[in-house]
Length: 336
Image 1: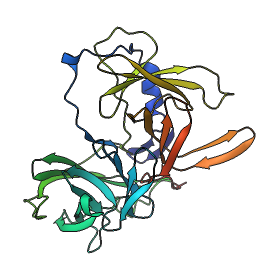
Image 2: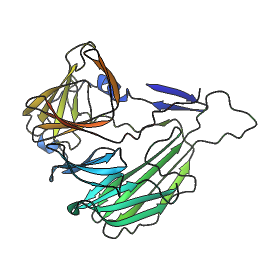
Image 3: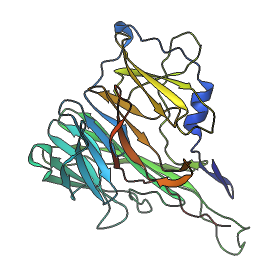
Image 4: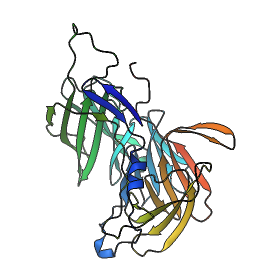
């Protein structure tokens, strides 16, 4: 956990959030009855920057090279790549809506619409001018976070954006210099995926409290008796994961994940993992999940791993492929 005092605010980078939620959760991994399940889409977001299409068995991934890579979910091979977009936001039929890094001005949110049937051919562009002091960058800054999300609605996509700016200070500020005020701005608009035409922007601003990196919390199965081990729901809600600690800290992969079909309760398989939980889904007896950057010493060898998407066979427990994903979280220094 990284905690920096920032004048009247605190910058919190809580990498332990997921672990804390898991430790505090003791919900039985009993599959929910069919009547209690939601209708699950075959296209969904695993984590920000990673869209999954289970029908075509592909993932649209935000690449570190400022592009979008389309990966085969079964073997991890890249099918095609597009430099038009940087961060995939939504998929409607064969149209992929993606965010670009601002080119004309920092406060312009730029979007592209790509044809997934034609290897990412550019179909249309869309842009919206945001409030003057908003910066629509994809990567976090030390004191600024911009996040855009998308919700498909027939032939349009509802884009919702949020911008937060905090005051980051180490030593006491110079009283002669004005101190900028922390603030938050948010808004929404629609984009027609056939033409790229946008609706009017609705936005608002306000003062804010502590700013934090957006971390995805686990979806915990609810409505069940509280016993161990904890249970977590897949990103597409079709499977559940039992997480059990099986070793102490001397062992790197000290957790066992056991996966069940949510509808029937049938066991699909299990793997060893170094995490107690991670965002995941299952396709053809392969579990695909995200790992954040980490440094570890295994068998006396110290290694550093970036943010990645990983696939492991639930039959053999062997990792079949992994691919690097663009890490947008600010991990640089802070003022002393």
